Image 1: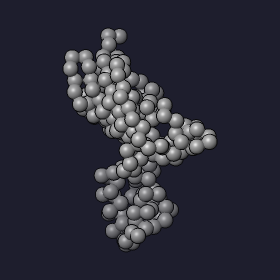
Image 2 (image 1 turned 180 degrees about the horizontal axis):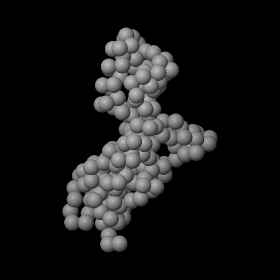
Image 3 (image 1 turned 135 degrees about the horizontal axis):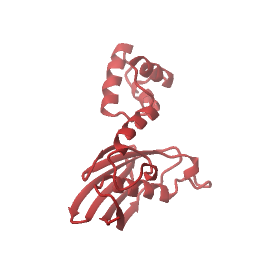
Length: 186
């Protein structure tokens, strides 16, 4: 159970937390602080902190302009952080259109597309193709879960990039992949 803080103290901790982790949901904040979701929403409103979707959109808008090898509309998820030829992070909120109706499990092609499009986004090339993808689905993803993908370039040799992508739901790794991408002349 969370320790209840006075409003002033809660506001201070809330601002610090969201500056470090801007993509925490109101529900997660509600649990952390032991208050209602409505209280968290009122706190954010008083502090001038936008809702999660707006925070994600703002971060994504700033990052899409850096991407060269893939169009914004082709990236699966919201690109929230990118450093070309180094790393990137994207988020995908899963919904009922992405799942098998019987099991409510997210279809693998959405998860793969999220990983592959993030791998493309972080390389500093105009045009590239996937040469090899070595992937592993570790845990089923269920409807409504938020996916957080992190990609890192492990090596660059001439026109070849080795990119590792890990996708988590909270602290559980649900997917990992190693992509070999090659730049090609357009």
